[in-house]
Amino acid sequence: MAKVLCVLYDDPVDGYPPPYAREDIPRIERYPSGQTLPTPQAIDFTPGELLGSVSGALGLRSFLEDHGHELVVTSDKDGAGSEFDRHLPDTEIVISQPFWPAYLTAERIAAAPHLKLAITAGIGSDHVDLDAAAAHGITVAEVTYSNSISVAEHVVMMILSLVRNYLPSYQTVRDRGWDIADCVARSYDLEGMHVGSVAAGRIGLAVLRRLAPFDVRLHYTDRHRLPAEVERELNLTFHPTTQDLVPACDVVTINAPLHPETEGLFDDTLLASMKRGAYLINTARGKICDRDAIVRALQTGQLAGYAGDVWYPQPAPPDHPWRTAPHHGMTPHISGSSLSAQARYAAGTREIVESYLHGRAIRDEYLIVDGGKLAGAGAHSYSARASTGTT
Ligand code: NDP
Image 1 (cartoon, protein in one colour):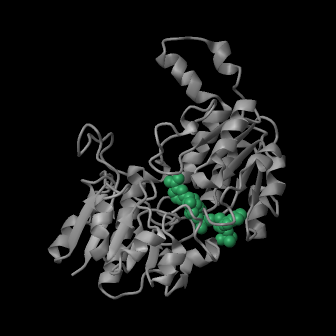
Image 2 (tube, helix red, strand yellow):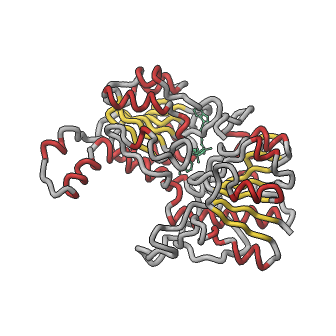
Image 3 (tube, rainbow, N blue to C red):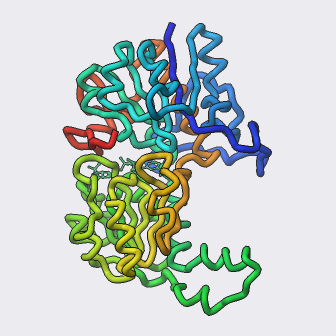
């Protein structure tokens, strides 16, 4: 029987379950690529429920316990003597979400001799030391596509929020004010702006598609070029490198994974090459941007705004300088954890667990590391020596 250790974010401060705003969520038939949604044998939750916090347990509790497995769910993941560290030595499967990542460092992996499977309930497995996982024969899997569209919607929201100066204007209303000149002094139309995506994978392409109707000029860079018909359809300008892309853009959105090629990519030098007053949106991973260089660029006006939902570490400490930087529109890491996304990645997690426990192959598109090397989606999007030192 397997021991499953699931690290999830805390329940809502007002208790679980929360009062829900809606009765249900739309049923999605397929992902845009044609990939099927998760296909577990069954689910023990109602789509639309809060599953990503401790009491939600990703909807796995009855399935695992009825089959005699042990499920430990905790939010206590960091610091010496955490519950995560205490349970790791005899755990076979670790599950965590990027929003509240259980950092599986090389040291922790060395302390987990029974660990066989690390599942990311969501997308982005950079919180796992992938080299160490490969060396120890641990399979790393994530629920590819489960929240890609969720993030793309968040990116569009954040671009519009920054460019139109939404957040300070909303705050004016909350403060009972009517200071229109103050609100509009930093408010522009997105129409006609040059918007570029660093990477055009599942999220990046979905962002580009969603922005096309705004009559903007679209740019992208990626390691693999999109098909010519997609470039034509969206009127995309391809740039061979990020360095080539950013000077051409008024708005840049980062949609690449965190790996050695992208870690610290947006540093003082790259930021200085952007147009003065450009906007930068990062919903990919915090460490793709140099933390202090972002603050400097906001303070000098080199960046007119910075938004996103990814930080390092997570949870971000109370004194993280992005919290108090000027002209930011940051949220906690939420874009990929809407209730809609949770239903998909909880079902996908269950599918992966079922496959593992029944000795069936895990879908290739879910694999990041398998058989001692990058595999499946991981072999495509990450790079060898995949650890970034952030774990
Ligand atoms: P995909 O794998 O579909 O796309 C990633 C793309 O990035 C691929 O096209 C890949 O290129 C490209 N890429 C990799 N390295 C580089 C590089 N150095 N320069 C330019 N492009 C590069 O992943 P998704 O779109 O689904 O997700 C992207 C990332 O977004 C995730 O890895 C994760 O970090 C983050 N994410 C954030 C979430 C949130 O809640 N904020 C939720 C989900 C994901 P190619 O494959 O062509 O080689």
